Structures are given as C-alpha cells and as structure tokens.
Image 1 (cartoon, rainbow, N blue to C red):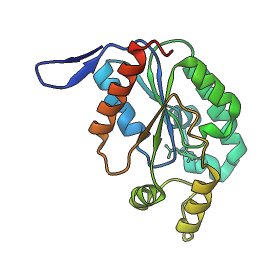
Image 2: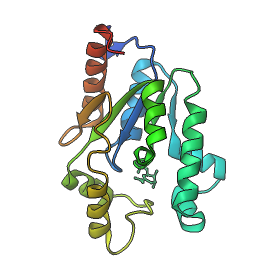
Image 3: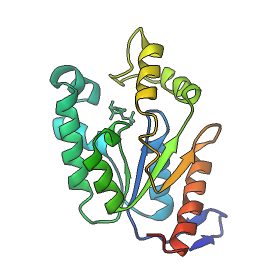
Length: 188
Ligand code: S3P
C-alpha cells in the first residue's frame, strides 16, 4: 500500500525481497540504497559481498583470478544472500549470464531490471573507473560489444524501468509505484 507521510515521501509496506538487475552504470546500487531506506529493509550488493569475501576489489579479482572465478563467487554469494530474509539486493551487471542465477532471483523475490540506452551507460561509465570489462583505451569498443552481447538478458525481470534521463530518487519512486500495483493485484 502506498502512503504519503508528513514529509511527502512515498512510503510503502512491502514484504518481499527486491532484486535489482541491469547493465553496468544503470544505478542499481544507488537506487537500491534509496529503496532500502524508503522500505526500511536491509540493503546488500553482491559486488560488495564479493569484495568483502575476497578482501580484494572486483577489478583485481578479474585481473588475477579471471572472470570464471568471479562468476562462481557471484553465484555462490547470490545463493547465500537470498536465503529467505527480506532485503533489497543490487547485483552486478553480469549476474544474468547464468540462467540458474536468474531462476533463483525470480523465485526469491521481485526482480526489477533497470534499463538504459547505450548513450546513457557510456556517459555514466566514462565518469567512473574500476570496471575491468570496459576499462582501458578501447573503452568505446569494449562497451559497445558488451552492451550488444547482453541485449535481451535483462528483459526477463518482473518489472522493467528505464533510467534514461531520470534521477535516482524518481527511479525509486517509480519502482515503488509499480511494485504497489503488482502487489495489489497479487501478481506474485
Ligand atoms: C560486471 C558488472 C560489475 C561487476 C563486474 C562485472 C558485468 O557490476 O559485477 O565488474 O559483467 O557487467 P556493476 O554492474 O555494478 O558495475
């Protein structure tokens, strides 16, 4: 149910885990933190859990141990964090590459895909670093190839929200509104 409190901030009581998926740079962590705050739920991020587990930044894990090592850890951490407690979870952009991850996420809560056009992710990722898969001189080429290779993989979510030209607080509001509609209709 949506209720406006005295500060005019939309709040909602929701008792299911919320899982954010989406390409790098779509704002899963930022939006996830806002959602967790609004919904009074704990927030987790699979990348952060992996970094804590390995005591190493993600880009160094890729560099020293390789992508398949990282993907195994990602699947392991995902299964551990989705153990039944209610939470908001931001995932790494590649979590959808593993079909078992996708099935687990869909059976554990509401999966929300944040989508963005290539121009949006390019502009956002140009301003940040530390993403091994696109870092380096051939950033544009790597990014375009990766973006195309992921086309369609995020569309199997329960809810899809485009983030193009939107700010994180508005995206969180849109998610809460869409969740409330689905919730009322007992879609899950
Ligand atoms: C990856 C996305 C990253 C991180 C890793 C791999 C990907 O997370 O998990 O660098 O394969 O798309 P963000 O989507 O949070 O940047």
